[in-house]
Every structure is written in C-alpha cells, then in structure tokens.
Amino acid sequence: MKVGYARVSTFEQDLDLQLDALEKEGCDRIFCDQGESGAKDSRPEWDNCLDHLRKGDALVIWKLDRGPSI
Image 1: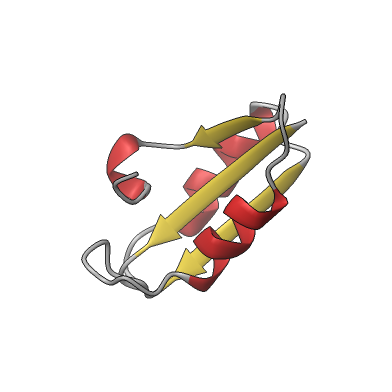
Image 2 (image 1 turned 45 degrees about the vertical axis):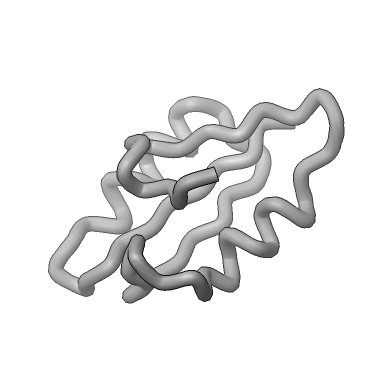
C-alpha cells in the first residue's frame, strides 16, 4: 500500500498541490497536517500516518522538507 503525507505550515501554502501529486502517485491513503510547523513536535496526522504503516508499505512525501526528521 502507498501511504502519503502532506503538510503545510501556513494557510498561504498550497495543500491541494501536494494532495494532487500524492493522488497521481497512486497513494491509497493520505494524511495531512495543516498549520503545523516543521519545528513542532506535535503533528497529529504524522503520528496517525506512522501508526497506519505496515511492513511492505511505501511512504510517499511530496517534498522532503514537508516530512519531519526521522
């Protein structure tokens, strides 16, 4: 399964652009955080995304600076 993650830190950034790209990539499930800074430790949908992942799944992030450090 392909699992996507999108994040925008301000409402001026374009979440739809990320979601469209993840859908075109064939993601079966997409998690997204809005208004969450990359510097914050609390990203609820990122946590949900990690909980959802299973062995053999592929994690797709639109751009590396949109995912937290792991």
